[in-house]
Image 1 (cartoon, rainbow, N blue to C red):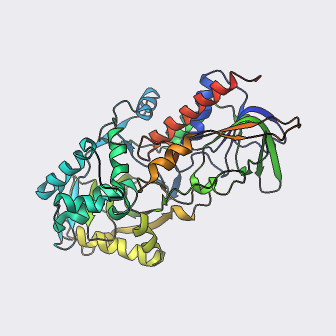
Image 2 (image 1 turned 120 degrees about the horizontal axis):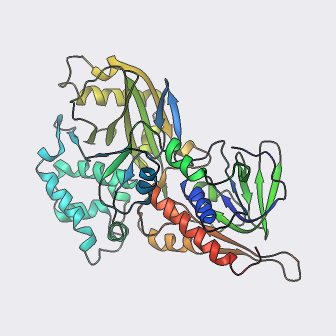
Image 3 (image 1 turned 180 degrees about the vertical axis):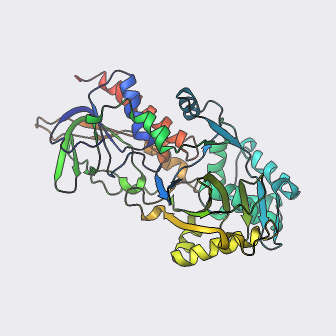
Length: 441
């Protein structure tokens, strides 16, 4: 879908970033009747942090994999309208307590009912202590040490960090604005890149999408400067919608510095040729273990794909051990958890076909997985929504440029997720449309 030259082409709206937020913005502008747009994407494929890798012919979701919540979820509606089948999963499914070497269904651990109740109560609380963390809240509520790390694995790791890094006032704000429900949905026999990204992109003409175009400078009014493999080019634009990760944003000249923490994410993929888990297994959350979450992702061509997931400071610490050690630790964890579920000795190790890891900090465009409810982040998120104006110099013929922002980090109401990114893109498109109504475009 790549064009190779948009040199000094002039458009009404230039969308920077070809992920969910950017494509949603472009799609919404087209719906509103704005055809004079273009999309610049720095990498060689659309999708952003929705990304697919191939492992022995099996497609793996390197980034976002689950759709959270099905109530009034525009992503669910869009996929179903296009005929894609979604499967709802119960999460958490199984649990593993490392100190006790106990593998069982999550609901069999009696203390977890109280843990879930303390989470449900967050949205009803009037306020929390300033800078109180999720870990402090757990202990203040009386959650015992037996399940404290399991609570961290279920909630904190999913939000993007450890419990000691997550702010309670920020979690409460997000919880009060979350109305999609707690369902976990996955596509059946499809990837998000092949389905959702393809749906969002199909309304945008191919000659309006430029890949391998990394935006580097937005400091000049009316000019979007970008680099390709061979040159520095630019596009004239009256309005810019910037829909890139915070890591990519920090590399663009002309923008304010944003001090919002971004958590790293590590996903590991293990292909095996034998089943060594219970038939009703799809997910296990793990306490006092290396990987807080492990799930069964796919079963194709006689192979099974198991995924390990770890976020935040734990991911950073683990990555310092190197890929070889990480593989051994993942295999050892699986061998231990499922030792009594199979007649195989070291079942994961003996069934291994291939292993791969994805470190989102090493992605030059993402530079991390996603933002999380860190202490003090609410005010920063609110500021990210405000348009940025690049003013023309007095007496010049240049026009000022208005930049609107989109992306999971920009949505102050939803915890980071792909529908949050989509809604932020739609909102930015509506802002741009309103601005265009006052201009000759």
